[in-house]
Image (cartoon, rainbow, N blue to C red; front, side, top):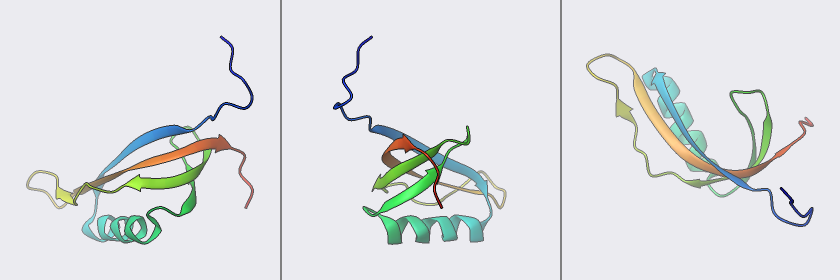
Length: 85
């Protein structure tokens, strides 16, 4: 396949986090809410670094069953890049 170097390489990641404590879910919710639309860096589950923005944040914090675990999610649009602190 051919891909021109000028073509955008942006991907959309739909991320869902589950098994969080109430405090972790609230902290993630606060982070997402305060950084919505701003450029952030994200390290994925394969240890790749992405640079991009949180685009949607529609998912409320939900409780997983009867336990004390919670879930929250968001969508991220970005491109793979190299990590540079």
